[in-house]
Length: 191
Ligand SMILES: C[S@@+](CC[C@H](N)C(=O)[O-])C[C@H]1O[C@@H](n2cnc3c(N)ncnc32)[C@H](O)[C@@H]1O
Image 1: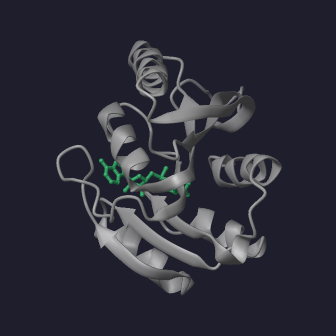
Image 2: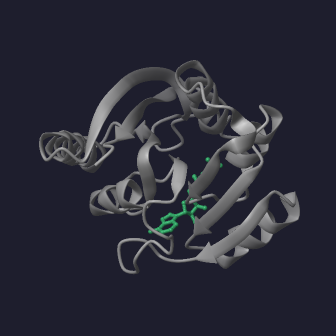
């Protein structure tokens, strides 16, 4: 109903910017939900997934995909990310970096989970509200600060249209009103 395109767009963005052999890549899918991101990545040849989500119901759905080696329950921001540090070649987070979901502070934990030289791919929607804008400002300040601290380097950012229908601002007449999204790719430092 929402024409939720974020997983497709994020995986397409990844495929344009990530050239490692997919079958060898250890993926941490944070806020994995029902497993849509892993399903699309599996079509590209990715095989090794660990998933984390704050909802047991979502993890039950993700289990049904049969794609995850492990699925862990954690409410991020209040509980630490349950992932071994420095292990994952690729950390994905799609559709959960927003106010009321995963707080900006968790981005450091995503970086910690990545292996040296590994990648962190983040996709968020741009709700046109004060809190949505504030979240984006805080997120981008944190991303930049982490780069200045030498934790990772920026690879690329892409702004996208048609992330999903803006259910908060769309009325029956204007069903084609979409919110924008932004995708970020960072590479963790080798040290
Ligand atoms: C819009 S869904 C995205 C799911 C999946 N990544 C996708 O793109 O299909 C957002 C997910 O984030 C999870 N989530 C929201 N806040 C969370 C938190 N603080 N900790 C862990 N998971 C959270 C929700 O349970 C939900 O599964």
